[in-house]
Amino acid sequence: MSRINGPFAAGLVVLSSLLAVSCGDGDRLTGSGSGTVAAASNVAAVVVDSGPDPSTQPTVNTLYTTVTVCVPGSTTECQTIDHIQVDTQSYGLRILAPVLTLSLNVAPAPDGNSLLECTPFADGYSWGPVAMVDFTITGEAASGLPIQLIGDSRFPTAPTACSAIGKAEDTVAQFGANGILGIGVFEQDCGSGCTAAQGGYYSCMQASCTATTPTTQVLNPVPLFAKDNDGTIIVLPTVPAAGAATVSGSLIFGIDTESNNASGTQTILTLDLNGEFTTMFNGVSLSTSIIDSGTNGIFFNDSSIPECSDAAGFYCPSSTLSLSAILTGQNGVSYNESFSIANADSLSSSNPTFTAQPMLGGVFTSDSTTFDWGLPFFYGRRFATAVENQTTAVATGPYMAF
Image (tube, rainbow, N blue to C red; front, side):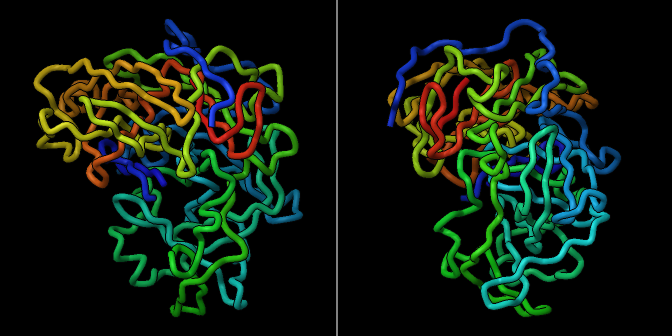
């Protein structure tokens, strides 16, 4: 599961072909187009800006949208929440409980106690109960959606097995968002992997918690939509090399379900059962690679590039580097990607109000077989994420296309 935190902090990951298309530039947008598409019931606005708490914790390369949640069955007990991060490498809606004004009941664990979840990230964890809501975003809706309430004051203490992961990310300032909307390629939070032995979900009675195998888990809302339920498309404009103060774009629901989400001549990379593919970089095959809108830079391992002194974990080359890599899906389709990495310290100091930085990169510290293509990869592209077992006009998910 991906996450970022703060202006220059690395957001990392926990945790057969139907059509062969040629390598190339895919459906890449060109020039300085807006990145937005015409208003429609399946189109939500997205924005890259300084986040919900810019005075204390400004963010960079973080994509946000706005959602509405209601008490199940109610049309009046509802709340619209902005600055929800859009994440193509996690599954389900998680909201910071302190921003909620609604009173939501906690879902029961199999034994009748309260059901809570420990959500691990590379740099920490989030802890909170599972609750049910009626969910809407633009004209799409999912009733009775299980979500996580992060940092709920009713359950202030995470079990030791959870807190041992690292620092808590249970406040808006720590999280860098009011919540996170996971719209990745899988339907469930952790599927059959959600067992007591694996941890993650807990049955809690007051401060006493025991790992459990849940009968309810946090779900990706997209497959629950009535029609536009087979995937999503993120459309963002090209960002100048120097960056931009803000960036506006669109999040389209559905693939080949409406006139505005038709497949084109894009490159299709089918993914394995972990949602991963292979990146060839510097002659090394990195088989657990991902494309992740929830990561705020391009993260990979290259010991020849110096790290920053001020922005720990980020690269600070003496001059901007022009690099390349080859992305290959499970279907054998390959794509040649050229990208640039600039000095993160200089990016931060030269334009401190710029929240979109296409040349930001850093070290992927937790796994030597991963190349994490973060939000900079999305700039200037129309990027599709197809859900597992869903068949579009060009392939069956899970796949990503651009």
